[in-house]
Figure 1 (cartoon, rainbow, N blue to C red):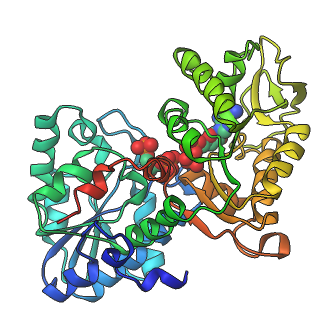
Figure 2 (spheres, helix red, strand yellow):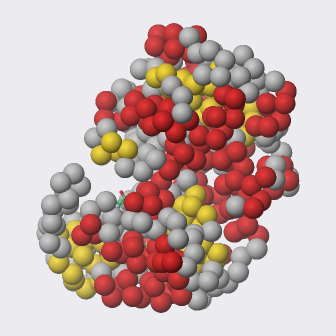
Figure 3 (cartoon, helix red, strand yellow):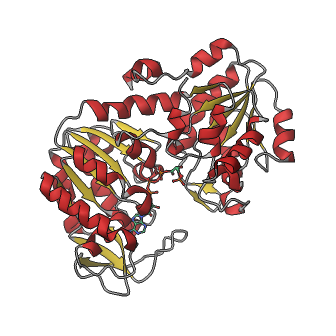
Length: 424
Ligand SMILES: Nc1ncnc2c1ncn2[C@@H]1O[C@H](COP(=O)(O)OP(=O)(O)O)[C@@H](O)[C@H]1O
Ligand SMILES: O=C(OP(=O)(O)O)[C@H](O)COP(=O)(O)O
């Protein structure tokens, strides 16, 4: 993108963060630089199915290593419960990061324990070490300031400088995102600079109609952003796991679909407010349902049934939007001046439930609007479904953001803990 050469300060007046180039100018040779990345990539067993988040932060790591820093990279992966859990190990990511960087990446089998201390101590100038999953430690995500602070103290002992570049996690008030930069001289990495630069455009210069598409599975996390979007968007299209709480709020049965029962009153309030404000609020008219969640490993045929969204059987769950909804959403995207999309329309990881997500991806590309796709899984979906490059033969998305919740909260105008912590 043309403006990625601007410094962060130039892009975001009033937000004063040191850039990584300024940090390097001050001298990083021989210094241990802690890079908080978002390497929360989709895995099937130990196979990384989309490495976009690793590639997105690699230039920051490479730049620091080239300047002679001892680069200590850290991230979360998934949502382990504050203790080691092998299915969420970052070990596969170390290998892939090494391939992308073209150099060995040492892996510490814990985050602040003996392995981390020894591996960091053995990291030479220009070399890279990856720590094990930050969320294997309860202090990382704790709501208790003292517990988070104590974990940040332990992390701080491993480093001399801090670079925040995990854009996908900047909305989290977590130890490595919020508390650690308060303890070390810090700067913003190049990925954060690019993300903030592009998303800022969506808060300032919005060509209308402004269409927001929401889906995915993190329903309780993301429902709240609609409150603010009702003041900004002209049209909101809802699909994926997010849609069933709205359908239930409208009085429809949703069977065993993803449901946030306690949010039904909130959904009703959003629907009423959308009507008052003249915001078009569009829900699926049909859905693909099945009694079983599909096998994402074997991808065995799931044989879903298409039903009207007001006729979901009691023993079935909705796993994708249906064909009529695909057409409807494509039509609602066609005249968009600006589109922001977070959250797949279905369980796109299985081919029988990928068509809704494909239709929305194609809808964005067929519009003449400024198009932004955000979110770990949404970005993975557009890449794994073949929509990343010259998709549709016409054009690309204007921006694929590494953050879903982070970009939504940025667009809300919220103060994001991981950005605030990087300000000088
Ligand atoms: N109807 C549905 N039921 C269950 N899971 C769904 C449904 N629709 C989408 N998903 C799942 O949502 C996940 C992505 O959600 P989320 O993490 O919120 O998106 P992102 O990472 O893009 O922000 C995918 O793994 C997808 O399988
Ligand atoms: O995948 C992420 O967010 P996203 O699904 O909103 O894109 C980030 O890695 C944050 O993960 P979290 O939502 O478990 O804090």
